[in-house]
Length: 317
Ligand SMILES: C[S@@+](CC[C@H](N)C(=O)[O-])C[C@H]1O[C@@H](n2cnc3c(N)ncnc32)[C@H](O)[C@@H]1O
Image (cartoon, rainbow, N blue to C red; front, side, top):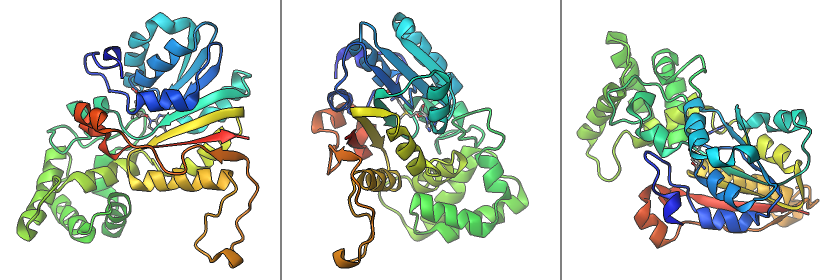
């Protein structure tokens, strides 16, 4: 990673940038998509390598991040088209631009460090802010709406499924008990409700609220819904020999990416014994990363937030 990629103010350090650039085999004049442009870290590196004549289509559902990316990428304005949108609308965006096919697509999933560390965005259990967690602030409902209106069973399911939290039922019950006294509106308020449960039970390791906050964030932003369909559709827009690269930050996301890529590569995705497997075996793509790429020790010491990242790629046949 170059110093240039690191030094912006409140910037998000692009994860596994070198590996992403190698996988995408960027070439001058190529057309690429950054489906989660965020603060423009990967986008900058891509834009530098597709000159002259290249085009990058950048999408993000977070308007503030996109505005920051514009400032960072202003030297490349002529080679960049950005869209404040959900990446699930990529087919519509490309059809409207009459662009097909593209040379490669990057999807760097999850939240950026800008979102996580901006107290007013309400993602962090360390913040006093309103429990918000919306990546797209034009969305009608936020984490506080979810926490105060979902049933106890719904909350327990969300915390269990998306947070893989063992104490999901106990936490959901405590949330419901508390909200009966007064609405839960602040990140710190929710964090202390969770803290109390863990204090009683004893706790070691990560902050007790980590898993619940992750679960609520995934639910509020519907991060897993439609990911498989999006990746399959996006693959249809890649030219022969072009690649999709995806970085996932938790196992639930990574499992979907792995399964979708295996399916596109004509591999088995079921648990049945081989003689009973009925998976379609038509290979549309070649798995470039049969096992995910993970950050090396040097990157981890410079950017500990990269520790859970898993990078996978598939090439169109
Ligand atoms: C990990 S950050 C990307 C960072 C970026 N690669 C960089 O180097 O600065 C993930 C970004 O994806 C965006 N995002 C997440 N889900 C999205 C979706 N469904 N559609 C569009 N953007 C999304 C988030 O708003 C966030 O800015």
